[in-house]
Length: 433
Image (cartoon, rainbow, N blue to C red; front, side, top):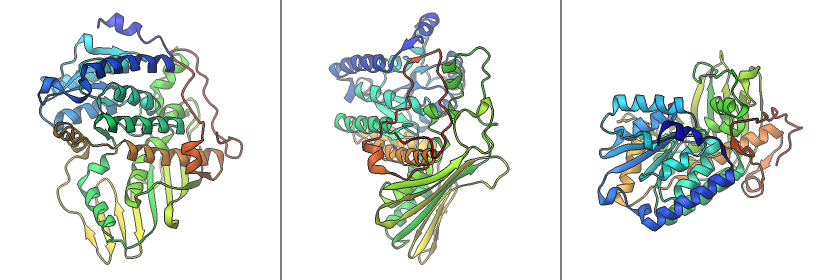
């Protein structure tokens, strides 16, 4: 597609229009039989990248490194500068594996639809999490295998959509892998195997943490400089709840995923507190900078969760599971068990960001698709439940939130223009929806 034609497409796209157009693409794909085959019977995997920021570019790189016979053939992003920067970086490293052309480069709110309509077998979804449910739905309906970054939603309405799309993917035989890479990391796999084998005895409690410094040196901040509300918020997506879910959802989901995996369950209820101690001014958006949440799981197990983005404090990103016979402790670098069956992993530990793509592609080629949608949706909902409790100051039950909550943070329409910033939540005043 010529550059000027692609850029004209980013004007006005409502959520209803996006889903309607995606359904049209889906029907065409199903009629062609494309949903269950790839590359005309060869083992070549043609990949479309949707979301070309740092994580999307990284995921594409990991995908290309993971397996032979994989190509990036289409790319889409809300912003042309992000797409072009990503394409340059990928081509400089994987010249023969990146076959994106101007006709398969798309910009705007409907870039996802355009990438899906290309001759791709698999898509990488790496836009801000607020876009994930509708883009995942469009990809599954079109019969595409999916790698989707975590978290997969920012509100209960989005989680329900992801669960429904996951069920549809299962029926279609589509592979779904999420960016919860610890599930593909050797020392986590071994420690969790031992936990499930009973090496800790009966589990009694757990703790998990994502406490780190500020994010000012990690996310590039875009000044207003004439940008519309929508563009400014999308470019600074990490500090707006409708786009990121807040950092308890965007980051801490990794730790919740490990706890849910260890316990083989999701929580029953949550009660927490938090706030904004250092986040002030226009760069702060409307998210908090610290959370502490107590979750209750089945069998009376309690999880204490902490996450923080404040500089000058003690950092810790880890999980601890406590049982009657021992305690496990895991981080991204190590895993050990103390107690009657003490153990520390010292085996090989290949890059899990690459391994997760290798596992996905292997499952596609073998005809035995991985299906991680439900796990990551429940881990995302665990984080959302904690945020909702903290924002409102209320103890909230999982059963209500997952089934009855009407909280939907998506904007009324997807177009560059006015978009008032939602006020910062105030516990005791903000109401659960």
